[in-house]
Amino acid sequence: MKDLQKKRFNDDTREQIITWLQAGGDSNKEGLLITDKQLELLDRWRYADEKIRESKFRREQIAGFICSKYNVSRDTAYKDIVNAEYIFSSSYPLNKKYWIQLRIEYLQKKINDAYIDRDGFTASRLEKELREYIKMYPEQIERKAPKTIVFNIQNNLLQTNQTADTAFREADDIIKQLEQKDDY
Image 1: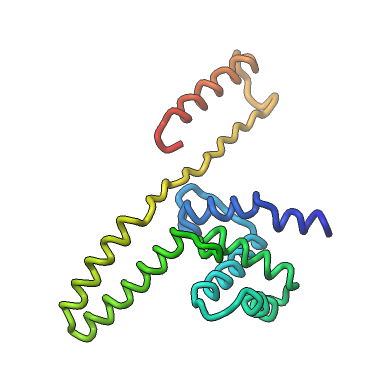
Image 2: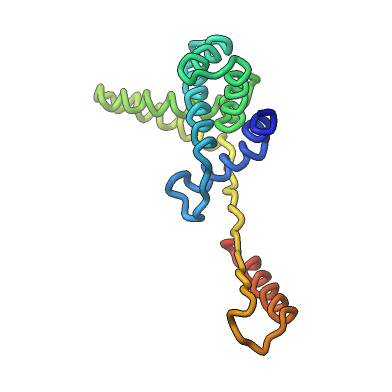
């Protein structure tokens, strides 16, 4: 049981989910997959992030919501909050990126409302302010997911004059060529 708990809450799991999200989630082109358990964790983290962004509830209340919705312990709920803060930058200690992101979302909503109300002057002023917040928002360097290259070597099924050492040397050459390409 402890091994499973360690596996579920370690940084590797969180980093795998981040890599999967940055690659495009379900529609990623790298062919990255996450387990059903990781999808369940991600769902809880998204819910926690949603509640944090509402800015209506304290951490204790959010943990209670997570406990009741997903039938998990209080400690697990707090870990979900921490992971949501880490992944989605919705952190409680002041996080500049998070606050800029919130302001951008707020301004987008107000701009849409102004256009619905046919108030072009207010919308244009808000768009000018939005441009400034977008300039402040840090650029995200896209993580490239490592490619997995699998070589299947089957003994006695293929007759060749090539030795195993030569095959491995050629495989290393191919790997080095692939690593030098931009999409690695």
